[in-house]
Image (tube, rainbow, N blue to C red):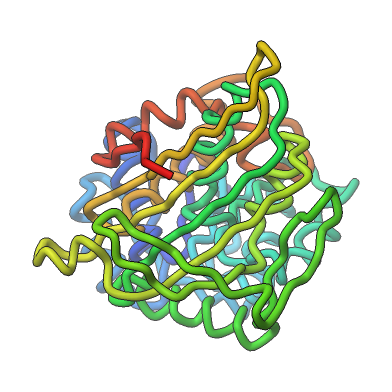
Length: 335
């Protein structure tokens, strides 16, 4: 007899993003059942025990059944790692439950889009944006202050000691092996840039300038299509963060720069910086948790089957509240 499908299966649940997501969901919804899945059962058990009342299982992402019992059933599948064989997606599809992916990136989403296009029996959330969609949502909250958005510039500074553990490092290596070009929107056209056109200086809060470059990331098309902005660019620099230079540990900074016209027709520019003293992990976990919350119908209307992006499901104003509760700040910054 198949057990009632009430638990959320978090693939890679003992990793940084997965464990952080599980902790948030436990805090928000103490009665929500969680299953921490990974290759190392002892590590998964330690995370499950720290949550209290969670389950731990081993999975094999090279197997279509994930190595789980035949009667295994879950309320949602979260891939907090690269679902390289798409067996997590297939498992979710066969059971008709929501699926969330984090690590596909702009360059790897085609198989997921094809798998879900027109055939999905449950929602699929592609959350391979920076910080699981948090930057997109924060930027859309700024864009709501404009009648017309002409340009969006994102500049993120990631500490080189905060690249997300072995899985995060593997993701970055995989993406950089495919291309070193960046994707921007210029004058309404999505354009690949490389060389000098891709390079950028990223200035962090203490005035230090890090060498960065445009990156191919889902945030660019998401922001461009959500706002209609004809010019969108996302630059990323990896180096020593301001927090580490102060001796306080790796921090994260993301500058959001929006230009356009306000509701009186006057030219307007807003520049705000998202800072988290704990680095990227808390905000990435938040992005995933917000997605799971919506997919399960714990907040908002039921999500229909098909492919979805974070900005289509999550209210930016609500996301800002959760961002503030995470310990991050999102404040005005001088140009």
